[in-house]
Amino acid sequence: MSATNFKVHSASSLDEALRLKSENTELQPLAGGTDLMVQGFRENVLDIHKLDELRGIDVTESGELRIGALTTFREIIDSELVQAWAPSLVESSRSVGARTIQNRATIGGNIGNASPAGDSLPLLMALDSRLVVASALRGEREVPFEYLFTDYRTLNMQADELIVAVLIPEVTSNDHTHFRKVGTRSAQAISKVCLSGRVRIEEGVVTEARVAYGAVGPVPI
Image (cartoon, rainbow, N blue to C red; front, side, top):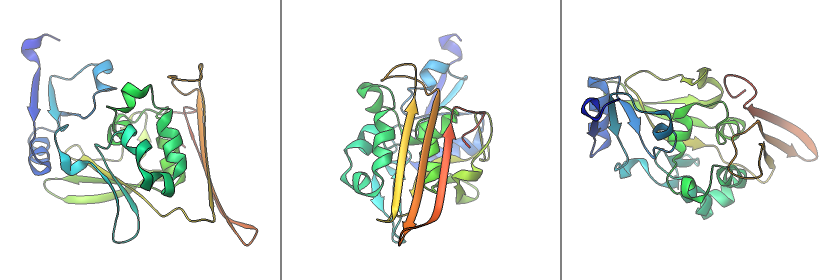
């Protein structure tokens, strides 16, 4: 693609970004760029990197962990809140590329890229997470991760929607979580298979168990 055909639309607020996306649904959101720069751009890009509204990690009034879409994997790794809430998410975040990638790559971008080998996706599915998406016309809605991936690199999202945040229910002392990634190397490798699990044990009895896999099909399962 020639530079003359390449256009970047930079948003200074989430409202502006949603408006631009509604006016041109073909705009490709650009967050950290660690996947998109490799894949190549469409003619029009929506730069959302400056939107501080989409950053940060906190606990909602309803008692869920909320991670903004533009939160980097390094911020997740360093977060004491995430370390206490979902240590397996810290472990999976450490498997995302090298430190330079972790400093730039965002959790929203990892989800939006919708690769079946995305390291964070099976774990977020096993933790019963929900994705918060928004549009200028309809506002926010939530999509459970188990219904999020509809086909290869295809999400249950409308063309005018942007990813806003991830919601993770509380992981209690009765929950035991696990993350395992197998690649061709011990570091900086794309998953050959990725497994995540959560088992809830109450008074010695398994009351709930969830296992999710990545890189074994067109979507995380």
